[in-house]
Amino acid sequence: MSSASVPRNRPPAAVAAVVLAGGPGRRMGGRDKPMVPVDGVPMLARVLTAVAAIATEVVVVGPDRGDLGPGVLTVQEQPPGGGPVAGLDAGLAALRTAPDVVLVLAADLPRLDAPAVRRLVGAVDERDGAVFVDGDGRRQVLCGAFRSAALRTALSRVGDPAGVAVRQLIEGLDVGEVGWDESGIPPYFDCDTEADLRRVHE
Image 1 (tube, helix red, strand yellow):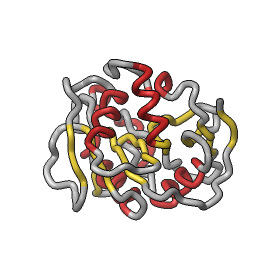
Image 2 (cartoon, one colour):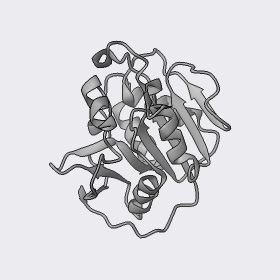
Image 3 (cartoon, rainbow, N blue to C red):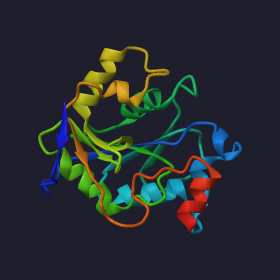
């Protein structure tokens, strides 16, 4: 079930972030996409900056890229290449705390910022989660915030997470949809291709 959600600025007791930073980057010529810079800053670093003020724990799922900052843990799903739900499963398993809400974010969101993150978390309210939705009504499922208990329950239902789509994982959850009517590149815009990068730079 889903419906529009209005943030009520009541943050949960604890928030963690799982940033999905795997994948071969085929549509970008095999480049390490999360480390591609936008305005001189790697996209992954931009996402980590956006969550730093609200997430007490951050797990990046993907290959080891060295020191990503204080308190940021890197893990790799096993076997590698299992897809975003397998990555999310590995990220949740690596959390050392028991957060109320987990931000689930792609690593290639160059215009994600702290206000957008706070807006997502505030929109969870009493729901199972909240995601941004674009102007065509499509859910941006890799730019969302979810109750960790709801995610773990959903993961237990799908069994082997390899190859499972995120949309399939959250099907049946009560997920609020957060619109974005401001000008410019929205926070959920993900860079999959060189053309996407050019759009962001322009």
